[in-house]
Image 1 (cartoon, rainbow, N blue to C red):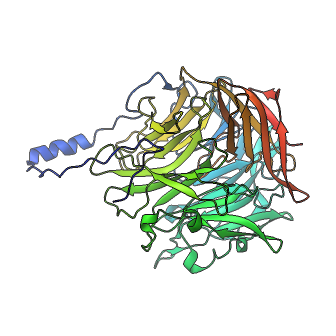
Image 2: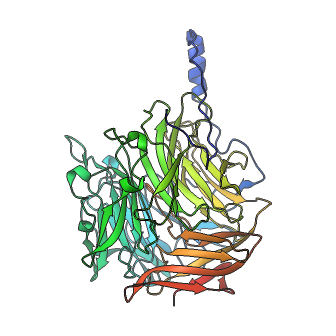
Image 3: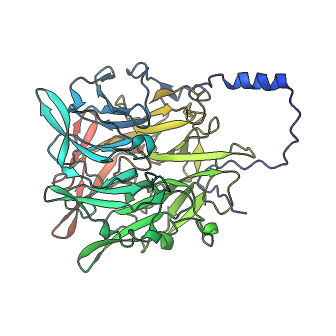
Length: 562
């Protein structure tokens, strides 16, 4: 029997007992049940709470439908705007932030019609204007000759127009599920790791496709997937569902994590110089990231992995991971479950202690669909919390908020706080009203039950007991513009230290969080901030220390590379 550890997460034990014999049901009872099944299910959280309140109507988003959210200051007014994908594959809709809320933009738009499965917004060309990476899953209703396209932001007559970038051209009809942007070689330009799933365009069969690594040099995109040692071998191909990055071994170089579905092993690409050339090798098995031990002797004994995301949750200076899985009560004991992987040290390769958890609500038959996750400090106590998008199997799959306690145990407070939205999708966080408390943006979808009412929720954080806070805006100079892939260490006057890895989107078909790095401080205040910029100068990592007071713009402390 596989152990289900609760050292880190409050887990709900599987209910024991035998099934009751099903009673004979009359025709009239069947008709009654069928009629009842057509009732629209209650939307939103299980209960109302004073901790969080839905203010979507007040914010101008009351009648908006959305499956994905992308938070970014598009017009440079220091207010974060919002790009929405209304459906799974749809045309982006742009909302600008005003003093009173969001309104649909008339001055920011695409030059020509665009449809996407997901987006990535950044200043890729470092010209001071946002650009948008548009990706299509390239499956059945989403087929396109160019599943990855870049649209460059251009100012024209007071407008910002996104025009197709003729320089950044991605070749290949990739069945893309996730794109992780990072500066793999630390030259100041963002690169692109493309996670590919099954190619289903062939009528006879579906086939696995290798992941891709692209870089931008000499004004064009280059396929450098050869740096992923062994990835192109047919035997090494896996259905990648989610991608993220993090420096797990502390050597200053971003490592790449991929999550595989269908029982295939996850991959951990760790980069090292070999004869002067940076090469990535898969170290997942050596680290324990590939799968749990129970399935090691079984073909495809891994999980239906969806995402992985790093954080130093226990503030020991060593990066940890959360790994998401889709799992069911009828799965084999060898099938992986969602887990926290606690880092054991900075050895090579990094290793982890795996603790699995199940959200089964005490039922004998259960489904868990952890699609994405976010680390965030919801109460500003200096201990990072965890929001999990458990979705796809209504009515029991709901948004989860694990709040970290002082002993580093996690307890699910989502229902108590009025956040447990049924069938959540697109979950993101940002400080909507500038009060220093993180707010949550999420939608409810009707996947697997069309009786569920689709709805967008903007939950305003009204927690009464919260600590001090600081919001940092990183400004790269030699590094990429928003310093994606920076490691930030914040030290407070009470002797505590927190570490963040700067990454705003991850996992399958991702949404995008705020570019601002938010730290809860508890009762203390900032002593210093140390930034490990994603850039090398004279073959040395650029590390800079900043002490308060910091330049402040719209409540955000500016940290600029010098």
